[in-house]
Image 1 (cartoon, rainbow, N blue to C red):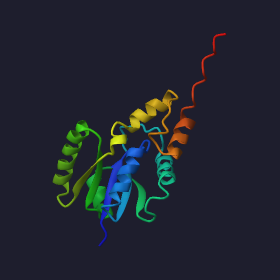
Image 2: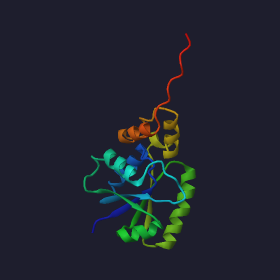
Image 3: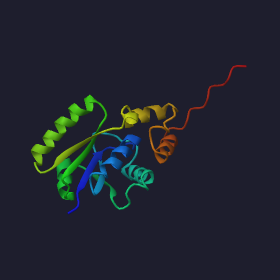
Image 4: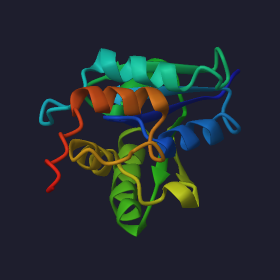
Length: 170
């Protein structure tokens, strides 16, 4: 029996921190599903198809055949059960993440006692990076190349064209 883990999130957009968690998850599990959450209360910048394409374009060298991208809505534990997984992978950046994730893990455990949450600390170089922060920097024309894979940077720059430079004074 192979060990399957679900790595849920909005991935709007995928960051290098997410990629790091995926790589490290695949050292523990036989297969990882990046499960893009469809949240009707949020308006994502990118569609599911755009996010899926960016994820696949950003991870071609990561364990071919062992990484899948899918979408789900509703309760995560219901999706996990449908997929036959026994683990949920979550990345932690800071203590604030831990408190929120701790609550979610306990709720998920209560709803699905046979599913465990596995927490991986983000690498030091990515601990401050979030999708929201990356979108904000991109929206002002900032350099995001150190925070996201190249296909994601290209998509963000297409969505947020760099502002024209102000005219120079003579």
